Image: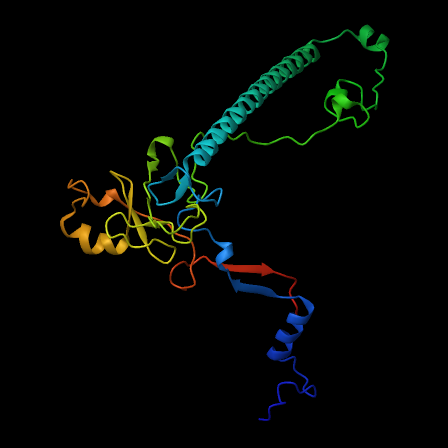
Length: 292
């Protein structure tokens, strides 16, 4: 096979190479690529504001938030629930009134139908039948109470509108914006980062590349270093320190108090250049499909 075989245009088949080439040139197909460093947050940044945390707190699932941001989010969701609940109660009351009115109309219709049938049973004299005038029935849509059943597009009060078929009561539970699990303010755990003390570095701690270190081993923390939070004190340590030091005796090295398995919270970090660090760092852009 020559090196020009893939570019041969004499074949009757639309080859895979030609399809990929045309898709790239015309903007069709799906474009997928690995997200870069600027597209993911750092390990010490808030999961909502994506800015370095000034007062960091962590959930039991390991997601880091700024305390002010996450409390504002919880308060917003609670106020939204109150607003939706008032709207739900209002619509529920209107629906109950509408159902009661409908039942009353059905009952009145049954009563009138019963009375009509009773009147037809009573025998009439021959004279009354002869002198009775024939009834003239109207074919108008607005007669015999049909004006209440038929919609009118030129009267604003009778214009038909689309209504919800079923009312759903709002959920009072506030969910985590990242893990979508129930979130309560009392479950947030304060996090204590140990800053790197470098007397020669005069930059702000938020502009430094190496900002924090492990509270026990003093190793530099970054996205490429798996970290964990010790729940009783909120200290941030490396996962290597947890596996090699803490898990041997399950004793807090700084307070000498016993630890339990639930006291070690694995921090959910941002992305790195390693493929095994995170599994959801592939960005895809769907474009119109190019068919052969």
